[in-house]
Image (tube, rainbow, N blue to C red):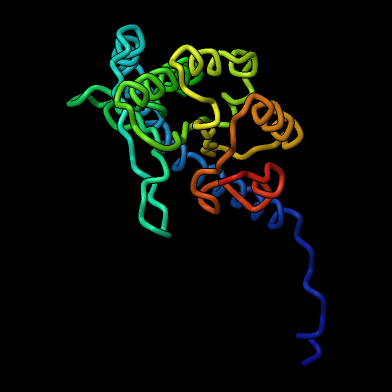
Length: 219
């Protein structure tokens, strides 16, 4: 009909009311989300704070244990080397490495923990007289730290009378990498020291073909 073709009259009061209702609805949704999120954040913060003293004790007493996972060659089935893994004190909340490293990162002590882990793994590898190569797990963030670049780990390896060519730096990626140029330069620096490079779990998490193409790892 003709009346159906007539444009609807514009009512600014109705339009404003609808806009206000929409804003109120969005505010309500944000409020509900915040109400659900805040207790969870509080619990996580309390969780980290509860473990701060335990982490401090672990680092001060070097209460870490190295375990070694054999890496087997498909052809022939011989042991090519071992991946050095770390465990916190048994029967504690920080026994598993995921909890241990997450807590250390939240407390700003990740680099300190990683450095101690490297020492414990290297010393245990030599003490157990394990054959083959050692895959030494390191995060890209710590790989770029000055103490590592200045050869602190290399000095320990030589002090333990371990040939650097037996040690493979295995990068484990828990965060996205933004500065590939710096990481590529760091890899070149460590290769110059005699190390080879491996990427842990390529294709999982943040690891990608971009990382592989930039670093060209030996493993």
